[in-house]
Each structure stands twice: as C-alpha cells, then as structure tokens.
Image (cartoon, helix red, strand yellow):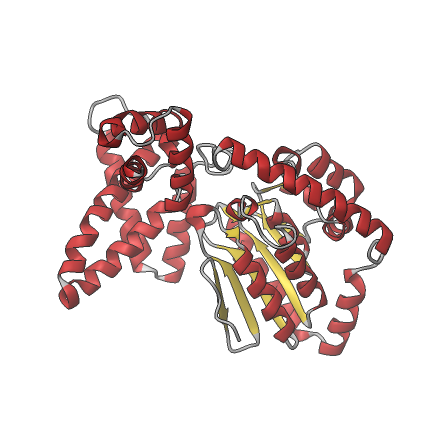
Length: 412
C-alpha cells in the first residue's frame, strides 16, 4: 500500500475502524492531488472497514481543493483526482463516517457527501466558491451534492455561493446528526458502535443501494458538461496567471466568519483534561498566562480575537527563533526540539495561513515585473518588501519573503 502523503494521516484501531485525518490545519486541511490519489488507491483496498473521516484543528474540516494545483498545467482537468477519489469512495467496500468538527469548503463539501453518514457540530457551515473561482463542477459531483443536500440547497451553494449553516443542512437531511461541540466525539463513537454491531452483509447491501438511487447522468450529458468544464478551467488558469498568483486569502484564512479563539481554546482545554494530554494543557497554560499579562499591563487592551492572535503570533516567533539552538545541540536538544515543534504546530492552527516559498515566489516575481524592478539588485529590496507588506502582511512569512525578494532581485 502506498504510504499516506503529507496532509493526511491514517490510524487503525483493533476493532476494524480506520481513521483518516486531514492533518494540515495551518492551511485549512486542503485536498492536494497527492492526497486525492492516495484516497482513490486506498479505497480500492478496503474490505468492509468503517472509515472515520475528519479534519485536524477543530476550525475547518476541509478547506477544499488545493488551489495551487489549479494554476498548474496538468494532463486533463485539474480536479480529475477529486473525481477519481470520490468515485472510489462511493464504490468502496467500506462505510465512511464524516465527523465534521469544522467548516467544509468546496471539495471538502463533496468529501463529506461521499461519506455514508455525516455528523456535525453546531456552528459549522458548508460553502462552495465555484462561481467566485470561475470553475464548473463535475456532473457526477453535482449529482452527489444534489443527492445529499437536495435541489434547493445545492442551488444556494453552487449558483448563489451561499454559506449553508449546520441547522439548515440538518433540516434538509445533509447532516444525519447535529450536536453541540462537546457531544461530537460521543455521538461519533455511538454511530460507529451501531454500525459495527449490525449484520455486515445487510450493512453492505443497504449502504450500496443508498449511494446512487438516481443513477449517474447520461454519457452524452457528461461529455457536453466536460467540454464546458475544460473551457472554464482554462479561463480560470489564465486569470490566475495574469493576476500573478492565487486570490488573496481573507484574514481568517478562507473568508470564514471569525470564531472566538478563547472559546476554541476552552473547548480544547476540556478535551485535553479528559484525554490527560499534559503537552496540550501546558501550551494552553502558557498562552493563557501571556494573555492575562497583556490584560493586566494597564494599556487598556481588551480581550478579543485580535489580542489572542497577537499573543499567539508573538509566541510563534519566539518558538521559531528557538529551533536553531535546539538543532545545534544535537542529541541533547532532541527532547526540547520536539516540545517546541509541538507547541508551534498547536499555535499555528489559530493563525492565518502563510504563503509557502513557491507561492511567495510567484507573488514577488509579479510585483517586480509590474513595477519594473528586475535586475536592480538589493537597492530595490526595501521597496518590494514594502509592496508585499502593504497588501499581504497577514499571509507572508517574513523570513521566506526576504529570502525570495533577494533571490528574485539578483536575477538578471
């Protein structure tokens, strides 16, 4: 079996239950082509297992298709791996349970719909930004969305680009269980337990019959739809390249409405206490103490998400600076390095997603070309950094940006 790629983890328990976890919360758990290919390949090998599908971080179940792949030239349409993965899940000899403890966006909605049972917590929503991105959904994907959400909600999702809240989704049958956040894990365990106690042959037969009650669209309609999709993807790719990169993320990472970080932290504290997770409790205690210090500083600071983000951001910078020292210490610093990396991963979940080196390079080259700064060397570095910070401060990694700017300006 092919090892799981970066961004998805598989765990198995003794009772035949597999857990697939999208594990890149800093980037809102996107579905890369590599992840989708793994899902397709892994689904074929399943033999009656129950598979729980979830996202790490508690804020976003899945942020959708990795948009970096949309801007690349590939053989066929960019979302072909998504179609293959969903089809493989729908044909698999396995029962998929989606544990939705965060928002589902774009392809993340379809991933949830590919599951046989969906359990969500209150406060989440579903969103499909196809119109905003200028792409046309696969006919099979639309049929699946329609099967799960019904005609009205699919029109609101796909045509109007509306966010569908958990209550609305549950009322239309898209969620089989809607529970308060503290009850999510207990409900998921109860559902999995119920699936395991039934007759395996009956479960398989009824499950498969429920998956495609209306059947797929006709071959002629699929062919016409695919031709339209090819034109739309070509246009979308051209727009992305002309703009010099991906759409600028909103401050919350995906344009999502802000969720109180303090409430999120408190929920994680309760869970960590139940799990006796000392590492998580320690980092939460450190963050809380820093927030309290700011509130008592006499500066008039109020406790809101802005304060928590400021504290988290400052602590992340401190942790990043500590990493080289632990690395230099070799074996003596290994334990300390592991602690720092754990705390860093925890804190970064709450911060806006940062552009990686490849995305930063695209952005810098576009700015340098637009302002005629190519070949001017280090004397233009300050101006380029100023332009970057003016419009992309929340999504840039300063160290990466500086290194990329220096490299681009040195190119002849």
